[in-house]
Length: 164
View 1 (cartoon, rainbow, N blue to C red):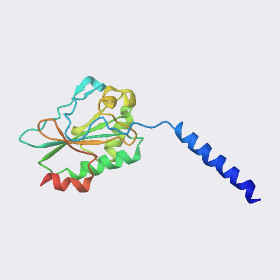
View 2 (tube, rainbow, N blue to C red):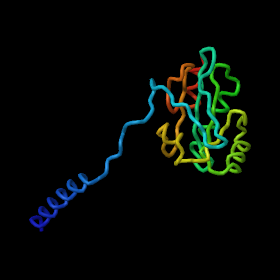
View 3 (spheres, rainbow, N blue to C red):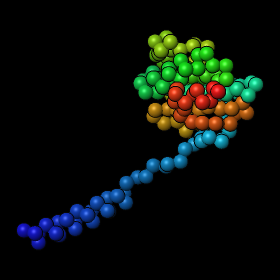
């Protein structure tokens, strides 16, 4: 009995090693990281160019989200509410929703400031999605007054350190 188990075990180990060599590896590098210059996003919806440079040494928080992605929507709302009274960081919130009705409903439900919310109707096929190397779950970027990324995927709790 034990003699027959050993060859089976060897075959299983060997076949596992072979199967690992065929697994497609994902590229671990990120498109934009802290220290990089931010591309200037041009949104397809009403062809809007977003000004990411804040004046007087202030920061801009550029947040990407979508109504269909609950996690990104929740993070965006938390960031927006955390920055309501901030004079050091302005927020630009970009929805990747395809439908304006979904976007408007999400802004209203999440009590977001409409003046800082924009929409990119191209979604995952848009130039903005590609330029920023966005993936599912989206991302946010803290950008200094010169357009350089200071931090990526900042949480609402971490904003206090940047506001001081």
